[in-house]
Length: 316
Image (cartoon, rainbow, N blue to C red; front, side):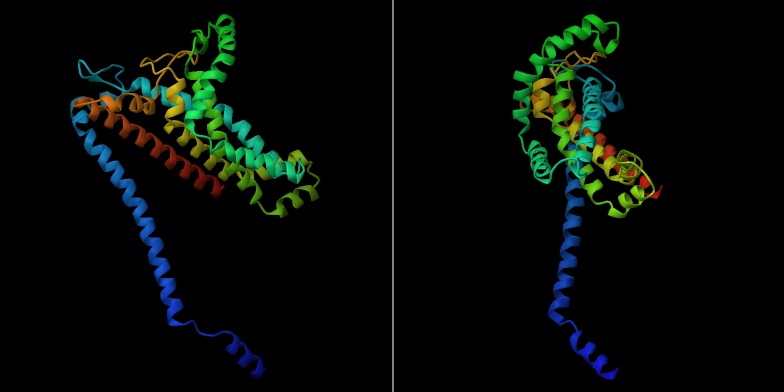
């Protein structure tokens, strides 16, 4: 027994002072990086908020609910842009969530041979690498021509519904929403797939052992167990959809009007900033900063809600 104790003591050598110093240095380095991220976030918020102060003093909270945007008369409001930002993001989520989660299930289970799954995973990740301006051009020359007859049919057949009350003549809310769907699919698919793959194999084995079918195992055991990761993916995708600029600017029509029809042109806060900031001056710059601050707060609110939902689901 004594010889075994001596052997253990001989194997477990005390750590050198250099190793301890390296560990302390690494810990402090990670703390500095974490603090730097928080400082950068606060710095951006302060810069945007500071430059928005003149517009805040002039328009107050009414800026959020006014529809006019007239640099000649210095009348500004972002209600059409806020409406367009939220609706276009919701259209994208409505289409992307079932497709993205379904693709994640397909790529995480053994429905396909391993080689084909590898290729599909690569293609899904490749969608995230395509520049947004390419999506915009593709939407102009491919999506809009395909949707134009469909939009005409929806308007002539279901025009009594407010969401189809106008014909689709070109850029509009629906083309922008469809392209946004494709842009956020990689986020939902990749994160949901990782959440499903990270589940313990014991869950599948236990469900099968209790007599559950494959689909019962997926929808009653695996998906609920990975629900927090899926919700996180959806919320991150929502934040991306709300902040997307170039593709939406090229496809949404940039109309500063509120229209319930998803076939009509609309606008978003990001598109407003992209279109007008280069030529803005005076109070208009401050108004654009005010709009940017609202978009910043909306995106921050989405991420906070995502974290709260994920934490609540983990406790269930």
